[in-house]
Length: 588
Image (tube, rainbow, N blue to C red; front, side):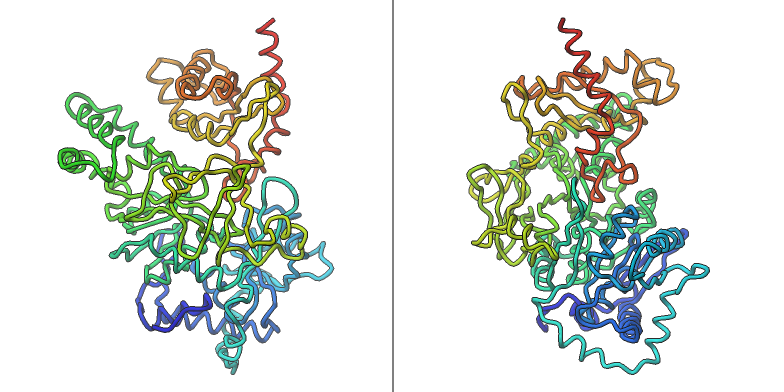
């Protein structure tokens, strides 16, 4: 088997080792559009040749703005095998951010998914000194269609090997602009070697027998993009869900062996199962909660008696949980946020192992990951091969190795701030190493705040605990330079409605229910119970319920669904001031 040194070597790798009729498939209008390995590779080459007629070569910059679809991958490989840089743009980006990235990265061509994104780009184009050439993946009136380039490529006599041979493992593959929670986007330069090493060393995640994967996290983010390369490396067929709203139905159709996810999706699956469990009666209800209690104690080293009882629970209860996720899951991969250890144990007990990992865009992304034979609940696993970590004196996690970015594009100052003279990248996360091997994340360095009493608060740790309640959809803990921590809470309104119905409370509107005294009392008790194990100075003393979810479009979430704390604080300033003013009035 020939060594893979550049990401586009994966195409040859699949043609030689895993040719299949369904290499990558996407769901469109309820039906699957499937690409065989040969057709995918041929189309990629034709698009590359078409791009050469527009002057695209090594060092050129081409962007893709699109939800997940097979065409995203074709564009990606077609760009990279010419030695050009692929710059992914989140479809949800605001026009001013798109303008900044296009100008900063000196992008010349953009592939846009549909009419809405074409119109957004056309508006941006009017403000640019050097407008970009736009090609759409869907047919749009008045727009260049990407198949025009493919058709040109079919009749263009170009030896693509002359382009491929110019690309080395240390050349830039992509510039990914991280939105961050504040400031202008930063362009993270990742090389072919960054990604090749990352997917090769992360392949320990997938056991034998993984043949199909469902994908729904955005390819624009480095996590899912690396995972897509990992699937290609391991010969796994990929199916793209039609949308976030169709995931459940798509899972039932594909019946995948694996998918990568964020903890919130697993929490929602668990919450729905719990709702059904609570509605059971008699012996069925008893068996359900006996199985759940057993699952919460799951450990890899339990004896035969525990495993005997677990086998019964899996047959009577957990088999239905497996069927809810298609029935063929061999492994799940979780990233992007902390996964609750209790929830992880439950999924493992149900026969669906979840491996939690950790990394950043700047680290390609995987630094550490749990895997078969080396898993510890409550941690993000051990380092992948070729990677080092250490904990600085202030608790910050530092890392060094093949995964660390080349730097921030045109920002040597920021690069020097984040990568020290010894090659250690400063992650901005706080953590500790458990048992000399497993990394545990405790919080973001920049998000830890201090109360007026001089006590330090790690908000993410608190938020993850409070989100264990099925009634809490989103929560942000705050309180910098205040006397005590408070929180903004977005209820899970479907669960709240169910609770109100059971309590005989007439449900009117979300806006009215967050002011209802019985509802507020319920949340008060929930917050008190979940926060009981924390120190008194850490416990949330007051909160406000919000009627509208934090969202990417609303500006409160980053594209990877992290809280933009500064934005949320500014938007809800009046509510926050009222929380603390009411506390003072109550005290007096």
